[in-house]
Image (cartoon, rainbow, N blue to C red):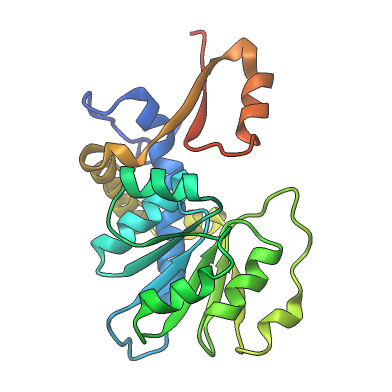
Length: 234
């Protein structure tokens, strides 16, 4: 195999294979998201800046939280159960975590904002989750979608109207259009996160390659946290 050397990243020995396998794709996704969020803020930007993110316990969700914190942004995290909320708060304490299984989670988010505006929300679930976020973001805010669950039905586009909410979709493919210098910064960010915050890169399970069907089933299993990995026989 022949590849361009600028497309390669040397991984230090102190970074495990389990972390190396996921650090680039998830960090790049988080970086693309945070840039989209920044570009969605009204100018001049008024501090403090809050963001709301669902699926906050996912691999990308955890990295998005950390990158936001490192840049002075205040995340508010959403998960789907109390068990997930407790686990996430224990593993990554700090920003508030709320379960959307609570009927009053939207009021809890408003209370956490303390009167400050919420201009950006990140959605990795799709469907009704977007409708719910649209009720929480402030007038003229933006919901940035980067994923959807197979079980979700389509979004009710009329839910965006009352608060004049914009819905923006983001794809990691946009990263490939960045300059080489911008890509290099994301490579350095991935290495920094992997070395300084290894707890962000949770592994749900490793499967031998012959068990790939079990791995596929695990990826979509309810309550999964962390990434599912396949081990090469070579």
